[in-house]
Image 1 (tube, one colour):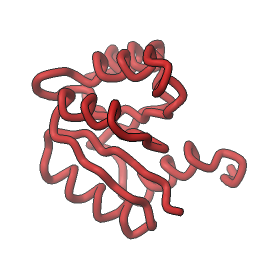
Image 2 (image 1 turned 120 degrees about the horizontal axis):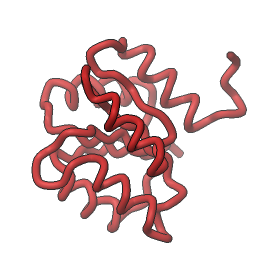
Image 3 (image 1 turned 120 degrees about the vertical axis):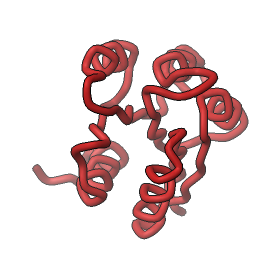
Image 4 (image 1 turned 90 degrees about the vertical axis):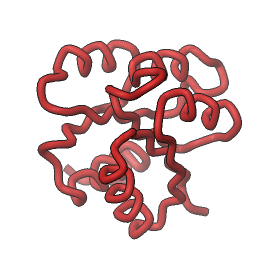
Length: 128
């Protein structure tokens, strides 16, 4: 059974690119365009991994991450934060709240992104 990934980003280009790359890797990909939609989806369904943009409309990524990590049902779901240049302070905050890792959107290839996803989903299978 394919792993379920929730991709949360308000950037249509990023959503489309990452969705295509993840589907090529045989993942079931669900998308949300903002933090409010993401929280609604997380409360209704179980995901194996969440890729979560830091800066979004309605509810930002840090607030979404905080809710995910403080809810008994979702606290163990790994979250990888997606961030842009100049958001290092927010990345530190996200790691403190409980994100498994982060990706710098401006500086990562699709292959590196899928490698990070595999590392989080299958930690025992990844050779470093």
